[in-house]
Length: 104
Image 1 (cartoon, rainbow, N blue to C red):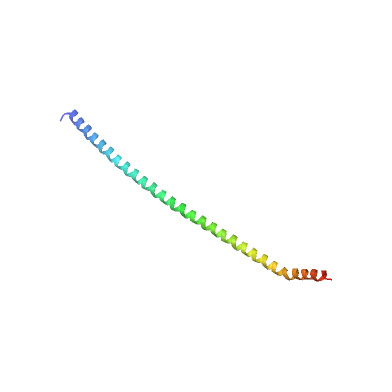
Image 2 (spheres, rainbow, N blue to C red):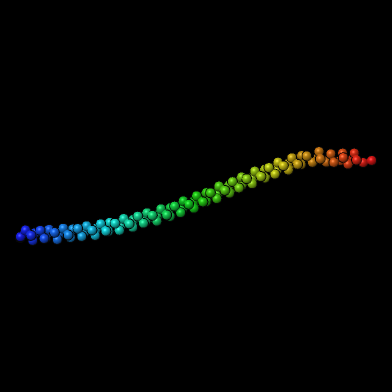
């Protein structure tokens, strides 16, 4: 077989190999792109789940703070009532003394 014919065969075979390699590379890139999109989709879903969990915790903490503030306010109101009730006898005595002392 003449040398140039052999070189032509080698070049043709090399071109087939290059074409096959380009096709394989395109398939690998397409698969990689699909995998990247799946990873992004999972990350978006996970981020949304985490955002919702954080929001739930924030609302729960706010509700707990509100309950604690309400309990503190109720305790303060109870203490003020007790102090007021403790002063009633002295106020009544003073009012009676004023009324009785003002009598002729």
